[in-house]
Image (cartoon, rainbow, N blue to C red):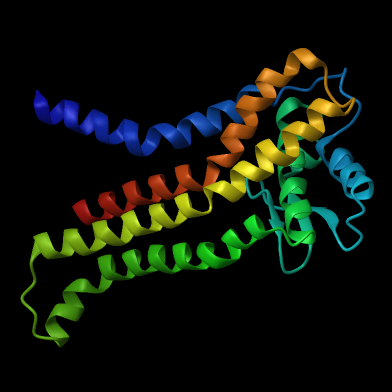
Amino acid sequence: MLWILGILLFLVLFCGPHLWVKFTLQRYAKKRDDLPGSGGELAEHLIRRFELHEVSVETTQEGQDHFDIQQHKVRLSPSVFNGQSLTAVAVASHEVGHAIAHERQEGIARLRMRYLPKAVFLQRLAAGLLIGWPLLSILLHIPYAVVIHALVVGISGLLAVFVQLAILPEEWDASFHKALPILAEGDYLPKEDLPKVKRILFACAMTYVSAALLKMLFVWRWFKR
């Protein structure tokens, strides 16, 4: 009985945040005819409003919304770019929030450039160790030990999550110091929708952390095989 509860707790901790983020974004993705425009139109308007002259907006793969630091592009999913919903408006303003911070060269905008490459490296390292550990133990004449293998992969996965947590302040800034004030102070949404938008923006801020936790779960599944 205890091991069943342990598995359920494990799934809640690692899958719960990702499922909540996905559920929240989908929950408010219904078209709203009372909104003045789509997410793409709002992003283009905000870029003009804040005079981000080098920034442009384009579409990307579904679920891959982000601000490209190198190319100065706000990239939005088709459902966000063309969508006329609370989710589309919130996600678009969140990504423009990143653009504002980076184009103004704010200190908090450097967190992603400093830590996100480290997170990607650690995640790839965990996957590489998972696949190559048996071969590595043969080449280096290290006895293969399941416990050591699990420990190395587990630590690598945890480090990846911690790095994602390190860039959380930047995500929080884009949601609650940029997007929310913009939407609250402008005439973009009915005031009664702001509590819903706060939930969406919180989900936006937690996207990277929830994805990192989910990847740790997949690492564990592969290890079990």
